[in-house]
Image 1: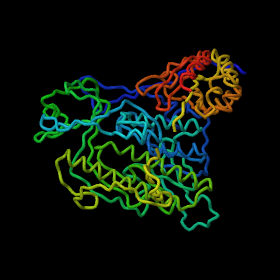
Image 2: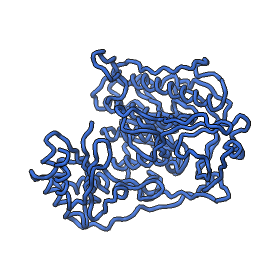
Image 3: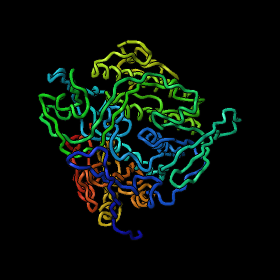
Image 4: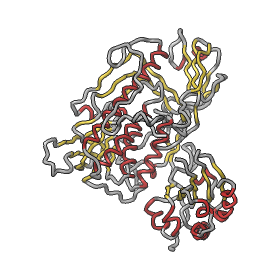
Length: 548
């Protein structure tokens, strides 16, 4: 094997955050431009990146929703280009939580919040469990505190795994959709792209286009699609900071109300009385929003152009639905688009995107509206102009959701299906250096009849996941030297950022050294069963005998 240079840590820089200075100064945020800034850096994570001028899907907007669409499509072999007008991904602020269902579809991230508390005029009104899912329906419980910045980082790294970058700062200055094109025209959408920094222009052709470009969506406004709903007279203030307080409920979804005092920052201590509240850190981010509640009249146009996320539904932050609903839009849309691109499904499948996700968005907006009216003690009208309080909890049948036969009990079409196996995580660093001979010995051992894998896997009990600190292009060549692992294991690319305020790579989190690696047994309920260094993998034979 050819020699390789030593592992090099990622280049870092600091973003000077001056959003709302206080007596404690400002918080400078560490970021990693070569990894995160897409094409807007002198050393991009995909060197010599040259995107195609003809792709299956072009995505306008690279927030969590657009990134989810891109990531999911790339994993299914669909070609994409994704643009964003910003110089870099979100540094700090905006959305900050993941719901259980979102974590099932994408990933789990952040500490868990399991209760809601409501105080009014200094008295506790509500303290109860919240954001819970029945154990049979989801392995995740509670609301997980994960910032939009962290979520974007996860998806950006996944794009890099597929040798794709977010094109920054780029906009779709105009586009043309040839609605009357002959069926032989496979790419009827022509998009004019401009790099706002360099002025370079380019023309791209696509089969489909996704507008994930936010509440003021240029894509939505260019189409005969109304953005129906209301603009309230309520303003929502958000401050991200660490606070010193004697408020007794930490890590809760909390609301503190006052009949007398407004919710401006200077009034917070009056509102929190009898508890005090003061800054314990600089402010990371703040904003004041005028709350709109709107849902687009349709999320699709001619089965070629699609809206997702804030471009087709907006509401208050109450309820933590925004980013979650948008990510679920993206997940729903991506697998359907992929089936069309691959020629597997009929075009009618795309109709179910609007049917399912618009129904869901309307429900989310109305639920958030109920929370908002409770908090604001107000009674302005609902989306449809009514004062109806009930929220329909049913899902409509469609092309792919057909009512379950009454003889089959416990499940419903359109809802999550109720897979447990043990997962064996093999932490392999970047395959080179001191870990290499140990990995080769492990590969030989796992192939023997007496290995714990072959001894206890007669019922397909174990799934092996190879965790590597390398990109797919590099890992693909190196893993070929390990016959058993290359034929048996699923490879996961551990390209998380180094340990810091945005988390850490998996090797660091699991304590697996780059010299010794590790073999970790994860139970079906995602708890750790046991773990050993790679050189001691045979010790797992004794562990296996205790359960099989």
